[in-house]
Structures are given as structure tokens and as C-alpha cells.
Length: 334
Ligand code: TRP
Image (cartoon, rainbow, N blue to C red; front, side, top):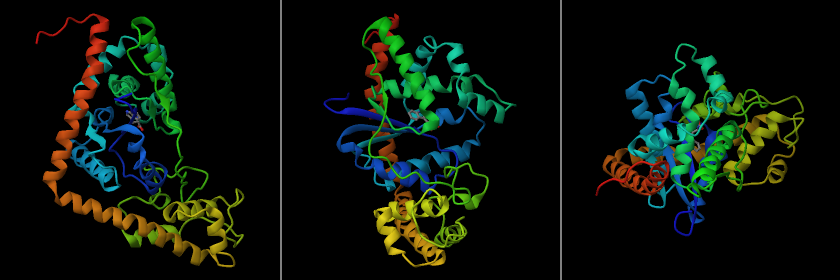
């Protein structure tokens, strides 16, 4: 809780290009959450360096992501959008929490296993400790809810375990967070293999529409999307490719699948795919224009970055000081 509102925390990595799936499935639905929750969205650049990054590229992408969030409609006066590395408490609380987390717990994390297999030449301590830094992110802001995908559930569970363990020793220090189950966004699948989620790390560039794709590229990818031989725009599990395109079209234009089926009754896949392409363009083009507009206003973005980092620092310090006191660190002379 922060004041009389529940707190919501989400972190996002600035690696890889965000996709239409990230937008329709998450970002777009977060815009109104600030009415109900005190929202914190952190660009988690400290997590990013657990795998090797090009420094200039990381800086550029981090800023692009932050700008995109604002362009997508997250008002930076009402949502705290900031860089993790600008707020000192993340590393400080992570250190404390490290001493309340077992090796065995971290060893079980499937993301650690996957990433160590993928980066066998750089299995560093930070990669192992990644979930503890994530726990610190969440607990610092006393987050009640965390919108996470299924791939981050194990980390959220661990966060809860750490919080409960700490609380059981020292009393109520941390809010034990829950997964945010609100209005769910559309789950968008790969355009080339509708059994897989659309992913920013897909090797096949035709599988995903990126938020910064130009209209021609978007149209081409839609036209190439995998369908089937039923030749019927129907929303059924037996036609996963078509179903996915209906989901995309519905989410872009705020229609129901039934309305879409009706609209394309008797029409072929060619027409339908064109319409999907146009619907996607009608959503992404304005978003891209807003990004371009914001990028021109360097001073504004810089102010947002500064003010929000200060706010995050202020809020997180309260929790940090509490935790430091509990574990026995001496009080700071004022
Ligand atoms: N690990 C998350 C991911 O890769 C990003 C993240 C970092 C996060 N800290 C967080 C997500 C805190 C939710 C809450 O997607």
C-alpha cells in the first residue's frame, strides 16, 4: 500500500524489440491501472547486464523503452516510470535479501538453468542472483500486485517466500505480493507458428510484428501469416492461425471475435489479412508518431527521468531503512 492505494510494480528489460504481443497483451491494458493502483514501471537495466550488453546499445534501448511507455499512454505524472540503476535501494535491498535466500532455491529457477545453457561462457553470479534483485524491486515498493507473464511466476513465488521468511523473523516489513489478475490482455501468438507465443526473441522475423515496424513490413507479415485450408474466417481452436489473426484484429479495433467473424462472413483470407494489416497499422502508426514526437523533446524526457527517479528513491528508501534497521544496521547520523 502507498497512501490509500494498493501498489503495483512491473519491471521490463530493454533488450530485444517489443512486439505487438507485448503491446496488446500488456502495455495497452496498463494505461488505466493508475486510477486504482500506485504504479511503478522500472526499466531494469541492472538485470540486463547479467548477460553481456553493448553499453551504448543498452543505454539507447533503455531510453527507447521508457519513451515507448509514455507514448503508449502511461502518464508519467501518474505512473512512476524510471531506470532501476538510478535508484540506489535496489542493489542495497538485494544484498540484504541475499542473506535470506538459499542457494537451493536459486538453483531450482528454470530461467537460470535456461540462461546458463544459453550463455555457457558467462554463467556469472549476477545471473544466479537475478531473482533476488527482482524480489528487491518488488518488495521495495511494497507492491501488492505484479503483472507478470507465466515465465516470471516462479520468480514471483520466490519473492513471496523471501518476503514471508523475512516477515516471520522481523514482523511485518514487506507486503507479500500477488500476481496481478485483472482484465487480461489478448494473448497474441506467433504469425508463423500459432502454437507459440509471439516473442521478441523469435529467430524468424516474420513471426512477430515489432512495435517499430513500418506499414509495409506490417502488411507483408500479416499477408504471410500462417492460416489453413478451411477458407473460412472462424474463431475456433481447430484454426489456430486464423484465430490468432482474429484476436489481433479484435484487440486493435476493440471488437469481439463474434463481430469479426460476422464482418468477414463469406470473405477469403486475402481480404481478411489485408484488413488485419490495416488494423495493426492504425494502432502502431500513431504510437510510432508519438514516440518520434517525444524523442524530439529531449528536455521533457530528461525531466520525467529525473523526477520519477527521485520519487522512486523516496518511496523505496522508506522500505530500505526499515529493513536495514531490522537486520541490525546502525542508524545513520543525520
Ligand atoms: N524478470 C522480468 C522479465 O524478464 C523483469 C523484471 C525485473 C520484473 N524485475 C521485475 C518483472 C519485477 C516484474 C517485477 O520479464
